[in-house]
Image 1 (tube, one colour):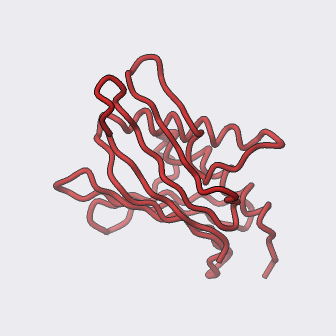
Image 2: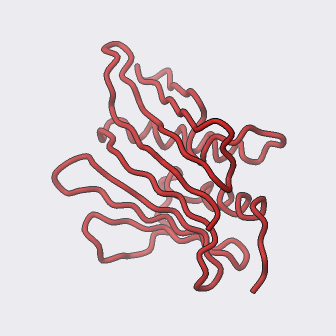
Amino acid sequence: MRDYDVYQLEAAFFEAMRQGYATDSKANRTPIDLPGAKMIRIPVGDLVVTDLWQVTEHSVRSFGTTTISLGNDLLWMMHYWGWYQESAISLLKKALAIEYTKSLEHPRTFLGCRGPRVFWDSANPWVYINVPRDQSDFGDFAGREEIIFTPANSSLGWHRYHGGVL
């Protein structure tokens, strides 16, 4: 088995995420027989990045787990859970896509494998806010993201997240 350092795992994560959920591409979707579940598996070299998420049938609650594995060995994981109104999903995907693209820049600030600290789309009165734990890095991180409807200062949803090297 080949050894990977945290920087190689981080590069594999961001490469895969640029092809995953935030893109709306169905190309990497893998069928899965779990209630409300969707899964994306993206090979990056000999690593496999898997993003599995489930949405409850009668509410907007959801959770997901993203893993990086080499064969049968899990090397890294991120878990996220919370809720988002359906109307907020497009802004969430835009925020994630922006940060996943920024991952190509060096040096950059690590923001917990989610979106930028603050993002808004002029087409909507919403703002995305990401608050990662201080001193987080790809090996050990946590935080909370939220989308706010600014005129009423009301939440359209949030996720808590945490993860790191296993």
